[in-house]
Image 1 (tube, rainbow, N blue to C red):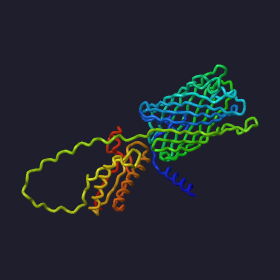
Image 2: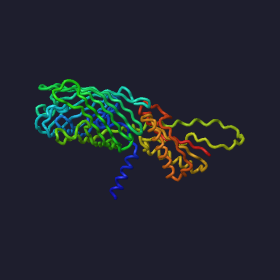
Image 3: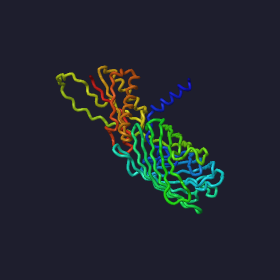
Image 4: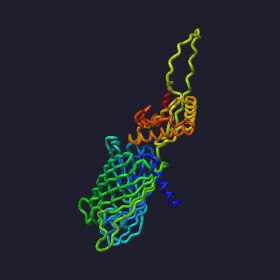
Length: 433
């Protein structure tokens, strides 16, 4: 019973906590899901790395391959990503004498496990995601034949390919689609077909720690081949846990839908598992700017004879500036400058206590990064955070209202991070009712 309650608590927390929207590495190192990559790229000057395990199945010869490897990605520029993967251990396992499939084309005798191939590529994002369009990127790659050809852990030849990626996401679901062509090198003793590859992937929801992942990937063989290679259709269904400290763990069940459960009267193994443990640094806000010293007050005007002014009518006071904005960490409700926020909230509390007739409106704002729907929700969370802090100081919550403008009311330039960080703010508007 205690364990059940604990698991329910963890799941509730994972679903409730907002998360940064950037991607983590796939099994090839590209920013994306598990095997489907997106049109997004790693931030310039930042990198990602991880470990992966991939167990896949093909009908030709009923073989089972287990790869253990490492992946990496590096943001060379704001749009160019360098990616790579290295199969450190390849473990073949099969029941029947296999014909040769493309992934490890010389599985024709019992072999020992060993080093597999190394792949490196470049991905360039030339269309950014927007509310009215998906993002678009192109990825080229080269496979370096580091796997031993004689031992059957590779073809011994250089391969290469080109892929196109489209991706789009909202708060509810993210989508990515890939289509591409792989040119396989020709081993000395037989012919290998090239590969036409295509697939789609989804993750949902997109801004929580716990996310579901669903992918469908197809491979069709094109051209002459010594072997009868069957079209593969891999269904991948699982989950990923993505944490704000940059860690991500993904695990999924994968099944070759085009593979029969029995081959030549023998039970086959059309299913397997894929898992990734990775780290991707999350964006951090820059240090606060140095404030200029206050200007010296103007000299007092010369004394004038006293005049008794007429009494103005009683009107609600207009509050224009005793309460400075409170700034927030990127994609969070944590205060960017905690000491300054404490001073502002203390001054606001004092004002509200001295003016019991005053009512307060808190406006939540964000920068432009993220979807409009997500930023409206984040602005609402920031406004509510400020309301809760004021209520904890003794201010009646009924005197406070909140509104979110998301990214719609920037107070500073959004093109650079130095100024963009000050659009992630809470703004106060007070007056009598």
